[in-house]
Amino acid sequence: MLIALCLWMFQVQAELKLPRVFADHMVLQRGQEIPVWGTADPRQRVIVSFQGKEYRVRADKAGAWELKMDALPKGGPYTLSVSTPKESLAYENVMMGDVWLLGGQSNMEWALKNTNNGEDSIKVANYPNIRLFEVGRNMSLQPLDDVAEAKWSICTPASVENFSAIGYYFARRMQVDLDVPIGLLDINWGGTVSEAWTSAEALASHEDFSQRIATNQAEGPSDFSDPEVRRPNNWPTSLYYGMLEPVIPFAIKGALWYQGESNAGRAYQYREIFPLMIQDWRQQWGQGDFPFIWVQLANFKQPKENPEDSDWAELREAQSMTLSLPNTAQAVIIDKGEADDIHPRDKWTVAERLALAAKKVAFGMDLVYSGPTFKSMEIQGDRIRVSFDHLGSGLWVKDKYGYVKGFAVAGDDKEFHWVKGYQDGNQVVLETGDIAQPVAVRYGWADNPDDVNLYNKEGLPANPFRTDDWEGITYGKK
Image (cartoon, rainbow, N blue to C red; front, side, top):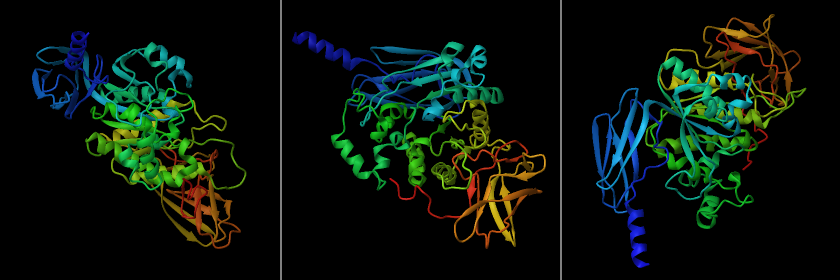
């Protein structure tokens, strides 16, 4: 019995192993150093061979090892080999291209088969240079060696029908326009809050979460199989450690993010914890300020007859404020939501707008990637003249008479009223009528501002905004 146990322990120790993110059909990031890591026998010599070059490292006393391969241009298929004096592994059909992470909640997770024209898209989805890496749902409050379940697949009708629609359409656009293999790391979970995707180290620095993190780290569960416990929103950091951290530092080009619905009730807090999460990811990856591009919340719920405060509008504002971070952009889809469905079925337009932003932020292309954004306003008696940035080739009002909708104005009483507006060149002029001493303007400030119609001539919608800084309905909510 003792001999058998010793033999088993030796076999476990001697196993050469890499995380599941390294597998046949994977895409490795072109143009930058490529981290490769795993475990082997303690102090064992490990050799990684790729494209005619060998990289050598020795495992530490715990058996962990990591190295970086040289940057390479796009190409493939190749073979990545990893060996020790006792074992060897080989990963086949490896491509060099661009790797994008797909993060967030259900709208990022939303399957291609459940979207507009999804069935037609699936039928023709044979694209061998698009590769899909799907991470299964898992929770943990402590670091894990690997994800619980994951695999790389070549894009086919069978593999893509349940895959992220936004991810697929984004990959198609980027592959067509850049002529490069695309790898997608699909790591998301519907209905989740951003703090579930943030590390304990980062959240501990925020006063709203520091005590909770300390308690969870000391007393939280290690087993999340019980449905009553398996609720990510109750356990900050649980998806970061359960699904995301095990693939870090796999080299990526950037991240796409569609989330915020579940944080809308705490939109003011999101002003802090959303950029905190982005900065956390960048620090953990060690790649610098990699591109991070998100989808602004769509219009949703029944339209209101009169201007009102809105937690969704405040969440959109928090998202826009996060553009202060370098190498970020957002895809505005205030014109693509559905009043009765939190999951808009038009994912193609969302992906197209993400791709425009990615081409600008990640590749520096000279193109229009954003709709109009507020620049300034000038009060001129009973009129207000509003100016914009990101005009593209010019302002465009989607109305044959040039009338602008979706604007509201308030005086010192903070009571907002709808106002008429019209386009004057690349500006909007608002008629304030009976509003005494107007001081504040809001555009698209509602859960569902379904009549907004301001764009640039490239067809990108104006970003909702407000000029006041009056406390909103989510102020102070934690």
